[in-house]
Length: 100
Image 1 (spheres, helix red, strand yellow):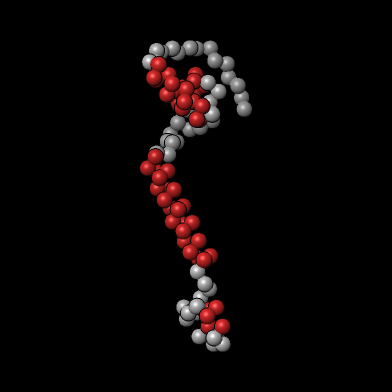
Image 2: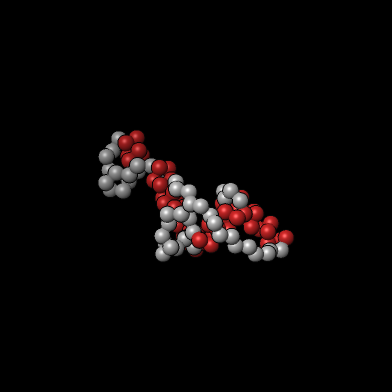
């Protein structure tokens, strides 16, 4: 990680409520301070391309839905009894003494 010297300062006023929101978001994002959070939010993370847009909430929601469906399918495959080539319950056929 390379450190660059910060020589310029930007200052602006916020209400108490806005400051609390910034503080909460900075803690949730793991920023070292509100200043770091504001800088990273406005300027982006070091080493990232500016034309790489962050995922939107809709994109994240869609991804979660796809994962949920995949997990449900896997769970169903694990929980369902094995089937033979004819689509019959292989365990029941084996217990009955047939291969059908």
